[in-house]
Amino acid sequence: MVSKTEETQLNRLENQVDNGGGGAWDYLCLARKLKVRRPEKVLKYGLSILNDSKKRSALGPGEWTLYEQVAIAAMDCQCLDVAKDCIKILQKKFPESKRVGRLEGMLLEAKGLWAEAEKAYSSLLEDNPLDQVIHKRRVAMAKAQGNISAAIEWLNKYLEIFMADHDAWKELAEIYVSLQMYKQAAFCYEELILSQPTVPLYHLAYADVLYTLGGLENLQTAKKYYASTIDLTGGKNTRALLGICLCTSAIGQVPKGRNKEDKESLELQSLAAKALEKDYKQRADDKLGLLTSALRSLKI
Image (cartoon, rainbow, N blue to C red):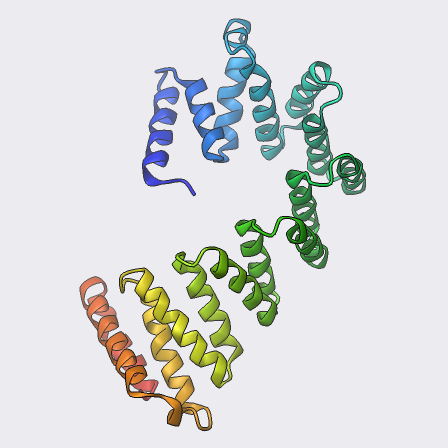
């Protein structure tokens, strides 16, 4: 994730280059380091270097990295002729490169030649079954075609090999939520919480899924994870505070649920409601009446 400081630095360099102050190569290096995709700027600045023989030769080995970077940016911008030219140059320099082979597959994707791209990726995976990039390209290709079931299948196969990839678990969870497959989504968020227990967004997402599933046990667990979200964010997560109130109300409507609500749990709900009212009063005073009315309707 890009920090505010890094984003500010990148924006400063972008303004500098746009205003004729130089620094195109520094911008491209930073964009690559941060894994930021700004294809229009990368394509513009990259070509300004590659089309100038003096600037290009001054890069040394970095020239080939720039060709790759520009090729990807060109595909993002649908400048496929530019991408093709860059890949041809790389093919000539590195004729047996699997990395260049990935670019060829991506170009086939950009052209919409899905079957040929799949064939190219399958061939590359035969040589290196642990190539993460190609596995991820297969997922992206399935999603681009609207084949969500295939995307789920590829993601599950990928996670069988790379179980520690948090982004993949998060992506799979979000796909499951979009398909209302909440039990499967809950499993994904459990994996994320186990591997990164201090990330509040995972606790919050897990609580949301459990609340949606409903049932006394799920609601009680959801309430606990809303509480842990509040704890991890220093009490500053409005959604989690509201989640506490919603869970309390829902538990009270479940047979035998109200009898299981202990004194401490009810106090937590009361504190959450007060924190919400205080937060709204400070940041959205004109909406405070709506909040008060909503909390009152929950009968808590």
